[in-house]
Image (cartoon, rainbow, N blue to C red):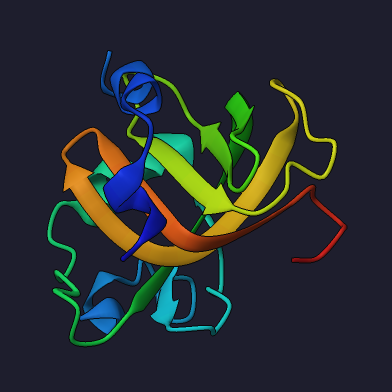
Length: 137
């Protein structure tokens, strides 16, 4: 079961207040095949337009998505870490991973992982990798 299916209610409440066809320009899509790095992560202000017509992976084939922005949420429940980037009015992105790696709210990070669109205002990346610019992923 994906970690997002058992997200703590408080986190969900806090966040609630085919790939090639989505490329902005050839080779610059934030979508990628599973475990392949996206060519370019989406900025927070770009995500809403990019996911509007995104394919629904519906469990058949994982699609990865990459985004970059400032951390607005950093939580760890002892097993999983939840890193949230982007804030309203932009789509929020929740990265479900294993460690915060010392990241703090306000740090700018790039996140990449299995794309799940919860609604028009929330995307969950699970599993997900997060890194500060220049650190790799």
